[in-house]
Image 1 (cartoon, rainbow, N blue to C red):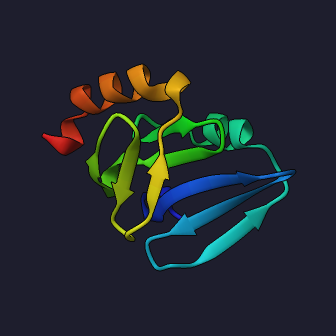
Image 2 (cartoon, helix red, strand yellow):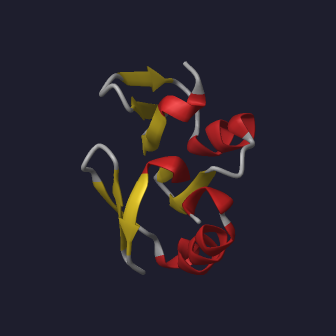
Length: 95
């Protein structure tokens, strides 16, 4: 799966659910941190202890949540707010 099709990843216990732009879901037995390290791309951003998003699928955001291209609204964790906003403002994809 090319990760440009990845909309978000959600941690669920010992598994990570990957949601694609084609509305396909994949479950992997791994950690969200392992996914983040494996992808190692500036477009993949951690927004919550349970969520990673692909910034190319970001439609809108506030300091508390993001709306993605598939209509999902996900929370931004307080610990991740400052870093998220900083990264979004620097991202050439959104400019």
